[in-house]
Each structure stands twice: as C-alpha cells, then as structure tokens.
Length: 186
Ligand code: HEM
Image (cartoon, rainbow, N blue to C red; front, side):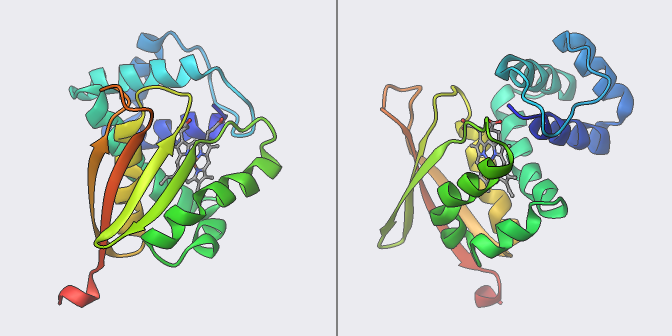
C-alpha cells in the first residue's frame, strides 16, 4: 500500500504510545525504513507486519488495533491534503459511503498504482447496507473503524453491525450502518 497508510499508522502510534513504541514496532516487524514516503508503493506485507506488531505493542488483538486505526485514519486524512476532497465528496456518513469509489478514483489520479477497495451501498429502511469488496484479507474491522470515524467527522452517532463476513465464507463483507445527527438527539 502507499506509504501514506504506513505514515498514518506511525502517526497514530507516536501520538498514543510515543516514539519508542514505534521504534519497537518497526524492529519487531522487521521494517528498516527511516521514513515512509507518502507517494511510494510498499508491499502490503509491510503494512500487515506493522499492524500486527502494533497490536502486540498495544497489548490488544489485531482486529481491535485495526478498528482503532480506521477511526484514526479519517481524522488523519481530514487534517491532510485530502481532507477537502473528503468533505466535498459527502456532507454526511451516508453520502460519503456512497461516494467512496468515486473518491478513491479521484485519489488514484495522483496515486496511479492505487488498488482501492470498492463499496456498494444500498439504502434500506433504517439505514444503509454497505458491501465491502477487496482482494486484501482481514480488513473488516478496519472498515468498521473507518465508518465510525466518518460518524465523528460529521458529528453523527453511527452504529455499524457486520451482517456478512468473508471469514465465515460469504463472498464479501457487508455492514448494516445507521447514522443519526447528534443535534437531533439533543
Ligand atoms: C481522504 C480520505 C482518504 C484517502 C486519501 C484514502 C486513500 C487510500 C489509500 C492511499 C489506500 C491504500 C491503497 C493502496 O495503496 O493500494 C486506501 C485504502 C483503503 N481505503 Fe481509503 N482513503 C480515504 C478514505 C477512506 C474512507 C473514508 C474509507 C471507508 C469508509 C476508506 C476505505 C479504505 C479501505 C478499506 C482501504 C484498504 C484497502 C483495501 O481494502 O483493499 N478510505 N485508501
């Protein structure tokens, strides 16, 4: 994956656990990179090794670490050069979910080797059903975190429930998502 993903993981760990923790993680993962380059492609194995070592360092199961990284990613992207694109792509969680493929396609104009996931979004009575398609394994908890991160971005209370799992033999992971504006609850 592009270096910006590894950079985000590095930023999250340094913010929450400090630079020494990140040094231990890169050593544990066998990654000898003084600094990731955002626009350079790294093997997926580097990102997976870093995520695994980060989970170990934080003393949590990998799915929990991936979830936390998903939540973090949205705030990280929001602060970065792509934040504007994210806001322009949707005014709330449902809109952005529906615009994700188009948004990644826009990003691919700058990152030509991007291998983005694909999301199918279907309106249902009480929310949306989101189908997540990727050839990369094990990232469903990351997606849940990302969607919850969107809720924070848009100040919505978001509930995400996985209804189909590739790990359990389904063709794709699917999530039932409900989003409620915070104001409406006051
Ligand atoms: C401005 C915001 C965003 C940027 C700049 C961005 C960019 C990227 C980049 C560079 C990758 C790595 C892919 C590769 O290198 O081949 C990626 C992967 C991914 N993105 Fe985004 N993304 C953004 C927002 C989102 C959001 C909001 C979601 C979901 C709600 C999302 C879902 C994913 C997932 C699940 C992957 C993992 C790859 C996979 O599943 O195969 N992204 N994105």
